[in-house]
Image 1 (spheres, one colour):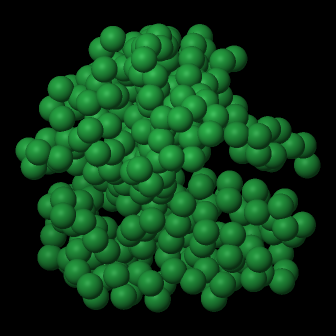
Image 2 (cartoon, helix red, strand yellow):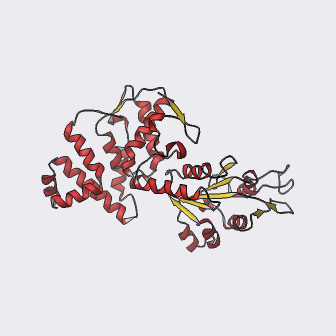
Image 3 (cartoon, one colour):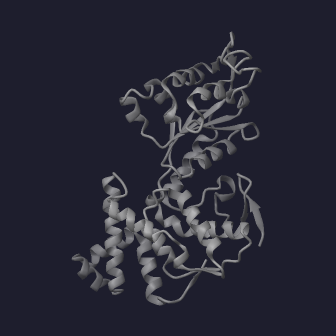
Amino acid sequence: MKLVMNDRGELLPSTMMGPHFHQYGIVGRSRGVAEVIRRIELVCASRSTVLILGETGTGKELVARAVHNRSARRDLPFINVNCAAIPETLLESDLFGHVRGAFTNAIATKKGKFSLANRGSIFLDEIGTMSVGLQAKLLRVLQEREFEPLGAERTEQVDVRVIAATNRDLRQLVDEGRFQDDLFYRLHVIPIVVPPLRERIEDIPILTKYFVDKHAIWNGRSISALEDGVIASLQEYHWPGNVRELENTIERAVVLTTGPLITRDVVTVQATALSAQAAGPPSLKLHQNVERVERETIRRALEMSTLKRHAATLLGITPRALAYYLAKYPFIDQNNAHRARASSVTHGL
């Protein structure tokens, strides 16, 4: 099998190379993914600040790297800072640097991440966790393109593109007085919203194939097929950990599989899905919960009867209304067709 390398240096099978895959490393063909790629293409040629919004595990860093790698700064530094992972007392020094003697244990002058990112890009992940004091200093960088290292008497000029990301509602943080409104508007120049996996479940089959191929190579396994029903069970789960959780699930399944077939018993999300369902709706978004109930109800009716007219009767709707829902959620009809043709036949990847 021929291997290729994506933007993050990972070896991947060439069969997974889609229209944008070799440029972005983003796997998916859903409308949500298409919109993310469209935004990347629009902003990559500019110098404007970018704010990436999305839940944990959706791939915000991947989008940030894509913006940088497609920009004129692609050959210059890309500095990644997770604001939530660095203690607040150290974050200011880590971002802006310090001079010798600026504080206890400052035995040498140190460059900050903004200095290291000069002429390139800096990715500030989890920007919503930054303290109000640091927010003011960041605002000055965005407005004046300058800052003062801790203990320094002179300002330092910097030419850097800021790409920020958060899984928090910054507007709500502004209303609560925990995020500066001026900084919010400076960051919110070009927002890119990365959809959660539960809103792009039509991408689950191709993501599953990608992760099976990836982890089979890494673990020296030969996986050729998924047992019937595996994809359907993955699409029924609401994935609170998003794509990251899906990858962990598939990696575990690859490791636990002893033959060429991944069986349902090693894809251990069903118990988690059931407990999550018992705990209540997976989202506070009304339309998302309504669509989830629609999909599950239609799927159950089609499992009871593959004859669509009969399934519509079970649902208490007309065949025309059922046709509307099947057009809205086409993967349900595809899964039903697979089950109808051969309920016990395995399907290749």
